Length: 295
Image 1 (cartoon, one colour):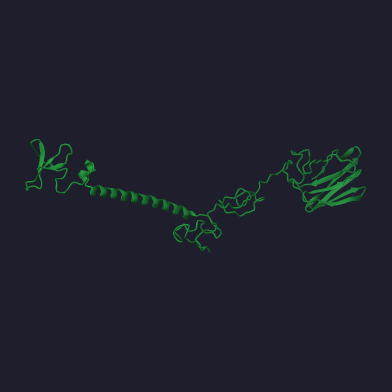
Image 2: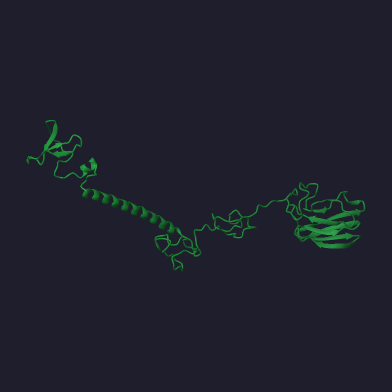
């Protein structure tokens, strides 16, 4: 099918003729001739869009298209100062030059070069994203990013800091195979001072800080215990004058009955012979509850 743009050309107007096949697809490589009075005025070959352009002269003009596996097509146009007509009284027009006649073109203003469907509307092809990272191939600087990788605006992997320049763990000295902390451990790189490639503290420093804090707390507890023990020894050497009743009970002489020993009542007192059979008698003081020797 041949169609014209503009729809009603005047003498010397630039005319665009478009050739399409039965599927309404542009046909390139066709041979076009423009003939007037049996004289060939123009010979052209259609481009990738199936189009040719030429200045149409006044008079009876025959436009022929042939080539490939297509039947030859021909249009006879009468051009005058009042407009243009064809033998059947109308000129097939294609205002936007997409190869679809204006009479059936649902999108008459399609941009030149746009691939259209049977009714002249653009065929939209979704942008491709080969590696599926959400960045279209047209702007993807890293088109083969592995599936699931976090990428930046140009489709390249975002470094989350878990790997260093040689592909090993970025917190050198934190695992159990090549060091105990981040200050004196070594990794598989050329480092000789036990530090990582970035020069910043690794996770070993965090472990060191935790260990140091635990040591400080433990030392404080030990010092407190020593202080308490020292005070007890000092008070015992002073004879126990400042001890309260509970302290007396704790450090009672082993020669007297135990505080929880049970005696017998005599003259209103609880008494006990201790040690039994020795004739040594003890009574329980009603105020303190301690056993006192009966003298």
